[in-house]
Image (cartoon, rainbow, N blue to C red):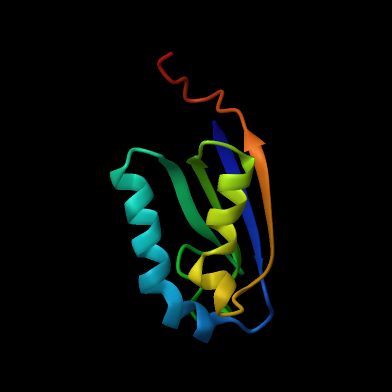
Length: 103
């Protein structure tokens, strides 16, 4: 099943985010390579693809996990969580409607 991982950044976390980014991206690559990642990305703090020093306010990951507990465990083990980038993380079951998927 798919799960949406919705994270909110702590204030002024851009420097920590940039330091932890390589490890964070590696985990996302692993999901992608396993065919389990639907989408992932940050929420810019301003209306710009590259917010510069304004940074980000959080992230969204939609991926497949065996169950809700597995999705929560994966989210809690994220380097952004461990380094204090994320102030809070919510994991919710997600049903993809568009674009339609096979099956």
